[in-house]
Amino acid sequence: MFLTNTLGKTTVFNGLGNYTDLLGSPEYIASLGSTLVYVFAVTVLTVGIGLLLANLASKRLPGIGIFRTLYSVTMGVSVSVAAIFWLFIFNPSTGFFALLSNLLGLPVINWLTDPTMAMWAVIITTVWMNLGFTFLILLGAISAVPTTLYEAASIEGASERRQFFKITVPMISPTLFFVSTITLIEGFKSFGLIDLITKGGPTNSTNMLVYRIYKDAFYSGNYAQASSEAIILTVIIAFFTFLQFKFLEKRVNY
Image (cartoon, rainbow, N blue to C red; front, side, top):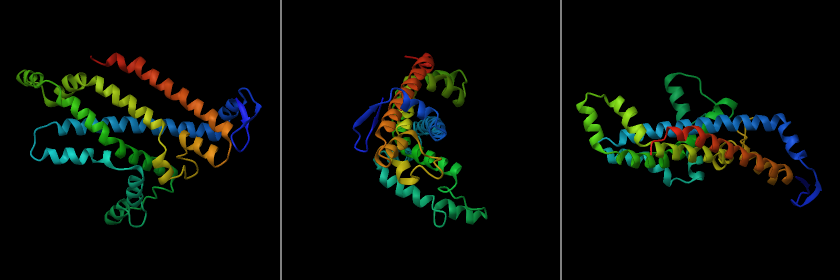
């Protein structure tokens, strides 16, 4: 609620001025919108893909242990290594997608220079990074479901799809609620991959709230604005977490 100098020391009491300035700024509203899109996509894709992979890996198939290891390997990859890996993949000249486009005779996508594709680039990278943790947690939950339930359902003639939605999902609903909440919060806090891959660009299309706080504080020296942004982000995370507990927890079977 103060203005600050370049060293971060308070100078003049500003009341709610910092907040009204932010909420009236088109750039800040754009960052907020980009963050909400990013968090929603990351949460849905991470939990959804993690659940499908965990359900597949729970089957007793030949060589399934190798697939379990491959799915969970991202837990041992640092953010910097992941960024280098994906920067190479997204490279418009020698990257995997560029080579695939050339092979199929399709136009090459500029993943990191097109605003829309840059957003998808950080979403894909974040989902890939988060998938290992989500996969392992959900695999453990699915493995703990009593096999007698599936045996009884098979005797009654229930298909695997019906067993998945009527047995697996309800039985692991507490774990699903846990990973969705954790993924949502982590999505709002994303920083490392954005800093290393896009640096908030192009044209601020991936300038998420946390990265904006970082730039305003340590690049622009506007600590008052950055502090206000941090408070707003805290309120937003608390609000969405409350919504999850309010509406999603009702569907959890303990």
